[in-house]
Amino acid sequence: MTEDNSAFERLRSLLAATPPPQDGFCLRVLDATRGTQIAHSLRIAGSSGERSRGLLGRKSLEPGTGLWIVPCEAVHTFWMKFAIDLIYLDRELRIRKLRHSVPAWRISACFSAHSVLELPSGAIREAQAELGDRIDFAGGNFDLPDHAGPAQPDVPSAAPG
Image (cartoon, rainbow, N blue to C red):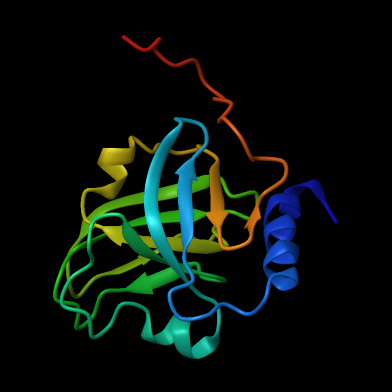
């Protein structure tokens, strides 16, 4: 395993060791660099059918929810009825690209990404996510061992006031 894909491989191993996701199985998504929550209820689209379907057919996406499409380096919003935020992640679960409020009938890609988070419009701004931030997932029956506990910022942050 190379250092390049170690975080993604750890997540894949943990997911593989967990019982198959049941209806309602969701992950919590954290921006570990900023110490903020991006979503409290993120579904995984890992099969070909789930990736193809994505968010199509939905009338909206509730705040705090979203979809993680793995693997994925490009998405479209054809036939969608609402705008979405997109966070593209590399195999180390670092943010490679951010797209805010992508409206219907658009295509977005990031060829250095391995997966993408589809989130309600405004989620990126609310979480204060930025390029290079590290993303952590928690939920179900596991936490990522190297990332559990308080977030360790990669950049200095303002002291709580």
